[in-house]
Image (cartoon, rainbow, N blue to C red; front, side, top):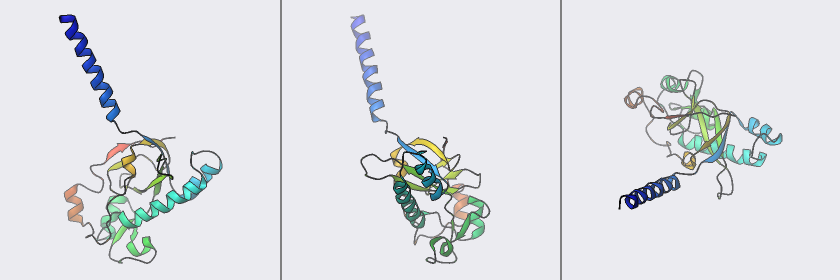
Length: 192
């Protein structure tokens, strides 16, 4: 009787491990670029799995997400505290004329492009410089060590963030109360 219960326990443990492994979200290949030209150059030299057309489409998507979902601040000072000196501009400057002059946003510091199988085209996310020199996505949920290199990410990292258009901009008080933009971010390395 003892041997049988030992075998049953091993089978249950093995099945549980297999089930848990099956529940883990698959990773997708992703690459970060500081700008569109870097992606195009890598595509032309075979340094990436993406074509120049993929680079163009992903960059356009990242720019659109940037305009819709970038963090917005009530002053240049608060924005630069979160993203670094010279890394912010007015909403009018960043969006090319639209928006209000009293709202400030971080400048696009690069973008992530991910090979989303079954979607037909790569997905993208904008990257912003943080005050610590690292880079983060629009929601501030994940920090990356750089804005160049390859990595594997969860497909959820490419979910479209909520819009910040028309929402009250973050103030010094709201940023302080949440511990800063991206304070709850998880660290991740983007390497080659």
